Image 1: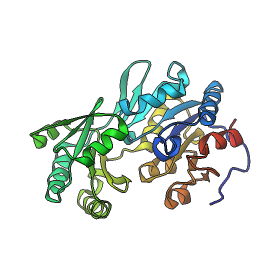
Image 2: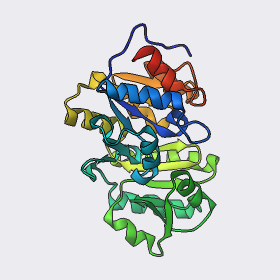
Image 3: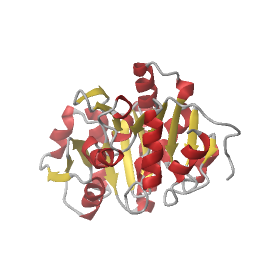
Length: 278
């Protein structure tokens, strides 16, 4: 899909999904992309990783970018937009949680179908059972796993998101069920075909970017986002300069203003920035 800018763009904030976007298939950031993002930061552009991962799962990539000590690299959007962390203050400055009754309903329906459930805090994912699907996400995000015996009670405090992993076909069916049953009580989507996520209502990466842009005094039309999947939909819709990865879902490419010429394995972000921003 050929959707490229006709002229140079001037974003003041660039939000970056991680998996299959900023990260290549080896889960690393290419030197070309690191250099491009550092040059953007030098020009005063905020560089904001924006991931479904918890903060601790994002930090290793923050170190690679080597921008955390700068004003332009101080913020992280985590857990698909339900949390914004200020690295300089070392505290969460924005947070939303899924109500306990929503989490309990999703959990009870999940266990009827044999799905595990996970919620997050700090560097740990808390699950109701110990199986390969639970460790799949923990390994990807480099999190510790803790099994909670009374998971239903544990949910009563509310959490920023719930992850329900499982077989792709069954997850797709469960996704439709939860969307129908929960309605506007929560945001439900698949971040990967085998990961179903439940987020707070009226929240997402796009909403978090808007909040951060307002916090920084940046007009919404001067925000840019790179994404590839359904958990990126809100930021692709809500940012002024939305960019889909050419390796991303066709739907995301269709709704984005622009599409990269190169994939996440071909320095897609770095080359786009070099050509159309820097």
